[in-house]
Structures are given as C-alpha cells and as structure tokens.
Image 1: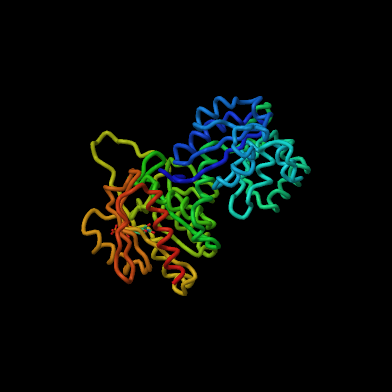
Image 2: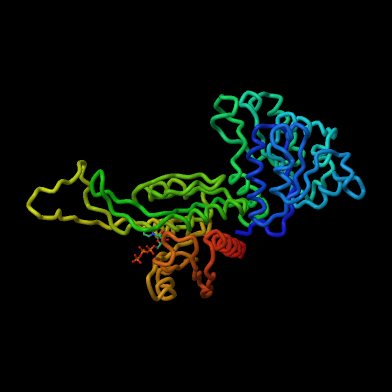
Length: 404
Ligand code: CTP
C-alpha cells in the first residue's frame, strides 16, 4: 500500500553493522511511496557505501556538513526543513550519546539538532551490542533524548553480529517501516484500550482432528494493527492462524471457543472497545477423545454429537460495562447472502451498537474485502479494498461513534 505517499523521509545512518538493514529499509520506504534523502556519518560509510544508498534512494547521499552541493551550503537546515520525519537507523550508542549532549560535529547530529522539533519528528532505531545497550550511560542517554523529544523505536532481541545474544539488535526493516507508517496515522483512539478477537476457533474431536473454518485472521489482525496505529492499547485474542503479531499489540493465542471466551472475559474489564472479528465455531463436539479415534474395520463411521458454543460477543455485550457505555462493542457478521437484512437482524440479536457485515466466501483468506457497517442510524458500505485500509476506516468510524 502507498502508506507513505507524499512523505519525505530523511534516513540517517550512523556507524553499526545494522547499516546493511538500512538498505532494505530505504527500499521499503520508497516502495511505500516516500521520497528518501539519505545522510550518513563517516562511521556508517565503513559499513555500507553511499553508492548503495544513492542507488536505492535515487538521490545523492550527503556525508559532510561541508558538502558544497547545496546552494546555500547548509544541508543541515535544508534537509531538516524539507523532512516529514527524520529516521536514524541504525542509531549507534555513540550517536545517541551525541544527541543527548546536543553535539553537532558532523552533519547527521547537526541536522538532528537543527530540526524544527515541533513539526519534524525524530525517530531513532538503536543498534548495538547487548552490553552497550544495557550500560547505564546508554540508558541515561536514551532517557535524555526521549525527554528532549526523540522517539525511540525499541530494539529487537536475539543473535548479534558479535556472536552474543540479547537486547540491542536493530529492529528488522519491515518492523521499522510499520513503526514509521504508524507515526503518520491520526491518533483517533489515543487513551482507548481495544480488545479484538480474530481467526477461526478449532474444536477438537480427538488429539489429531477437529472442526474449524476458513477464517485466516487477516481482518482481525488488520483491525488490531489499525487500532494500535491510532494510538490505542491493543489486546488481540486469536485462534490458530499463521500471521505475525502487529507491532506493539499484546497477543493471546487460543484454540477453542471456550478458551477464546475465557481470554476475552479476562481482558474485557480493562477494555473500552471490543471488536469481535473472530469466526467462532458455532458448535463443538460434545466430547473430545483423549486418544485418536481408530477405524474398527466394520465400515461404521463414528457418531459425533455437538453442543453449541457460548456466544462470546453477546455475553460481553450483555455485561454491565457494555450496557452502561463504558465498553463499546462491535460485532461482525459473515454471511453468504442478504447481507443487509442479516446484519441488521444480527445487530439486534447480539445487542451491539455497531455490526460489520461481510460476505464470508468473498473475505475468508483474502487480502481484500468489502464491509457493510450497520448501526441504529442505518448502513454505510466501505468499498472493496485491502483489509488494512478498511480496518483504518473502521477505526475512524468507531472513533467517531465514541465521540458522540
Ligand atoms: N461470535 C461470538 N461467539 C460465537 C459466535 C459468534 O463471539 N460463538 C461473534 C463473532 O465474532 C461475530 C459475531 O458474533 O462478531 C457474528 O458471528 P457469525 O458467525 O456471523 O454469527 P452467528 O452468531 O454464529 O450466527 P449464524 O452462524 O447463525 O449466522
């Protein structure tokens, strides 16, 4: 998606082995529609060449404040005023120390100091050895630069180039890209705690078999991501799906409807918005065998008996907090036909203020969808588009209704 269309990003590289990831980040930014001006420190040039970054960004890379190519010879002023954001990735321990002290002895730190701090966010992606990361001096400097207005994007955990394992790796390029995209989304749900269910549930017949459905979880995960981008705290309760957790989202993995209900009931008292996007199995086998059910050679098939699963959404919607308006509930309806009529009826039946209808076979497993929003005032359609785009529109619709 063209999430960064029209945005101009200054991508700063300070010295660290993670510079190799910055090449991929640069490509990602461009692919997302941004224009990118790369600024490198001398130390960064030891790890990756300006040639590589120029080729990827399509613009000459600037390393020195004495670079005379700028008409007024002031790249630190020009670049920091043209930018919608300055992203320093990697931000080395030394570079963060410089920022903390307000030093300006080379172009990148000079430009960060000269940036109009009220309008141009400064995002830092630290990268260093775990001991350097944990050192009190680094932690002190990180606290200082944040107090001074920089946003620290966090670090990854895992194997490091030095052979050690721990905190301090630079986030992966796609994680950084998601963080940068998130900064530009309006903070419509700041202060809210959004609870989302996603994916199918799996109802065991025996240890190797079960009953499930074709839900991929993509819509629920997109809603969790969009809510987090909008500034909410997000808890995502998901059935078995093969999707990465959106950044900054607290994920709770469950399998069956009963487990999903327990996880939702545990999280709902803290939530202010509940979006039930999961395709919960309506029935589960009355009993689940401890051992695999074997064919007995007779040709007879086992008789399966089902019981109905609890309605998780209806249960939450009937709670005191939901009825008093402290918890805003949004349901989904997966239908195969007569969407509007079924969605209206389901909204009443579930007792929710907003119900989102979609056609099951046209959404399950797909990256795009069409949504029909039904509330007490009527219905509106969000036309077919990528699920993340629809999720952002849905978040805006929810925010509008919370503000009423
Ligand atoms: N839902 C739920 N618990 C269930 C069944 C559904 O919380 N046991 C929620 C879904 O997450 C969705 C909404 O209820 O938000 C509607 O789900 P859907 O499967 O479309 O409707 P059902 O209530 O199962 O009705 P039917 O299958 O008869 O259409």
